[in-house]
Figure 1: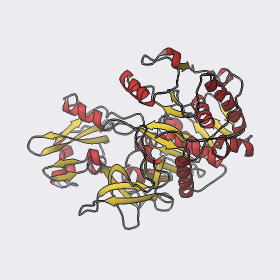
Figure 2: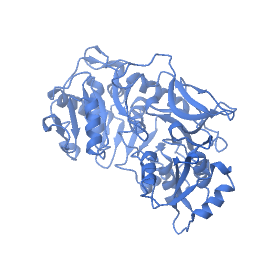
Figure 3: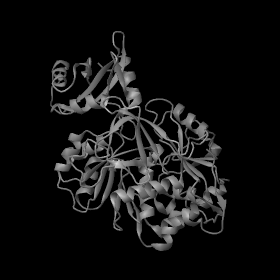
Figure 4: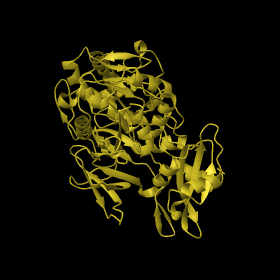
Length: 493
């Protein structure tokens, strides 16, 4: 993928979403966090100064700018400045190892790296150090404003989002402005539009779900209330007291919120999207019973977040699904088996046109998600598992997510994850790692008996491990590759 865009005059035009929103509602608040709050107009002016800062560093249209900034206003300023001047933002997790950082930086080949401190894997002259500071002395927005003649288009690459890498080498998904725009439109058609909407941002901004909230809010004229990191008690309070109307959580976050807050939740709360991994229907039912308007979703980096969402009014009987495809998204199941389960493929204008450094896909080419699923009789997508997580034991397909849903019903289980390991007799066998609920005493024998009551014999894990925790990725998904390695190395017993 390569960047595209034309030359224009003055403001960047229809694809400068912040500039257009500032022209309409400059006085409307857009951002509020512990560190700062800004109206749309104030943010617009600050972004012009950030453009000047980047221009002084010789950043030009098409150049990559890597950001290790924390999820606060400075990252937001950098995001909209990059769009305005045609640079390509590459947000990365500062918690990556030195080797992981270096590998991603090498592949992005950036003009500039912006970070809270100089790390050990890039020449200091190419870094812009942005210490945590009050908005009044923000390094990025200190200088004079600068105007640009770049005019982005729908095909302009907005950013590179590296896939999570939970199974294999991560790739840089080249997300365009048009792709984000279509995704925002499909999401709004699914959720409805309210000019008083306030999004709760708890997801990391190096994750597509967090970035999508920023862009969808500015397009819709909504506000964003951001937490510096996920906090179950603060999140529960904001959902309860009416501060926010929309939120996006991963299943582990939802469970923690429900553990500290049983409801009721504010009637202003319109939807809580649950994605980033298949949620157990019983967890969604628990949230629904507490009065939380949860909506299961399906999406990924390559679809600019949401690709399917459970429609309003389909709870709780639709909780076994991820809902119907968003407007403009086509979904099909390839090579289904007798149970209807096959490879999930998607197509549409919000689907990533390609990966950085690779030829783009054809306009009508289906994207292979790597997930397994089926469609139910109402046209809703049922995600079964990741293709790479599938366990083939004795010639039978075993889906870890199916086992996890059953084991999670055990009253003594707080969390469970299942991985496949090599087995001389069966090819692969399932290993279940279980975290007990507070005060629960779990044994492998008791768990096996429980599983046998609900699963076919070949699906029952051959090993059970009771552990203190399960490794998660930065966006809250089970880190299966790491978990599998810990099991195979005997570090979990």
